Length: 319
Image 1 (cartoon, rainbow, N blue to C red):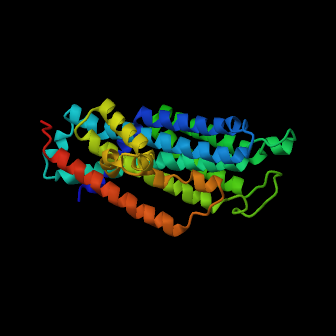
Image 2: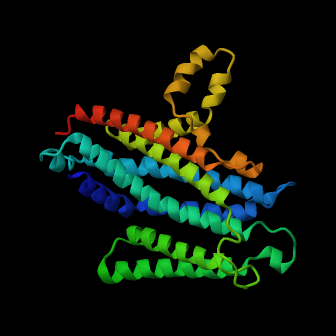
Image 3: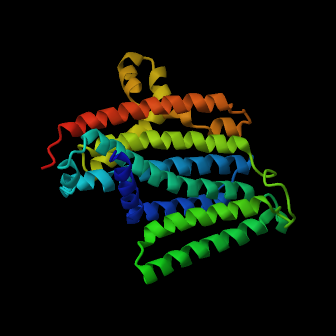
């Protein structure tokens, strides 16, 4: 079955793209800056930190979906390299599904790195007073700096000594280093005392991260479908339009003359359902059954988007 080899190849191509690493670095910088930016509210700064962090993850995930999809499928169609695959006895639907799985895996790797970094920033918290213990989290800073230095050093050495692509190596090594740093930070308190790893962990945040990732997967499927017929800029516009309209779908239905907006709201995925920040910042628990229901809804949306992608690509002249 060629689907998984196609997916593996698409994954390697995606993480080798410079834009993949650039968006990861941009997301990491944004998450780190959020710790300081969230300190200028008159209410609970840490609630704003969570809201801004989840917004950063969703926005970067949307951009990764658009750029990665165009870099793996649309670019191959434009350069005619896709002929190498379609000229063989490989059904086109397997090519589309394989590309989606590879792109989703590459985005999943980036999302994991950003999500772990988000959890680390939440552990650090926003400065609450001028006292040193309330200003800086020693373990977060120490293990975080070590993880960044190791990721850069290993990636640079692999590129110099073995000609490994720097973006791909950095994405993989940084994800592993950040995970190790997060596990070590979880075992040490702010005062450098050993603690249970679950002491500073909020399971609700993990559920919220999973909800956002489901929305990113839906946007990935939409970007893959658009890239079967459109170029890079048009695919980015479609993904951005789906992202923006998906967040205001409920508002479109609430308008006075909903007859005009109802068809649009019915076609565009309702991404507002995947947004957990309101529940998390207001202290409302998100049950696991709700996450399961959203997973089923996301699976249905992805199936529809990929079916459309197969129909569009089936009649596409790539010669």
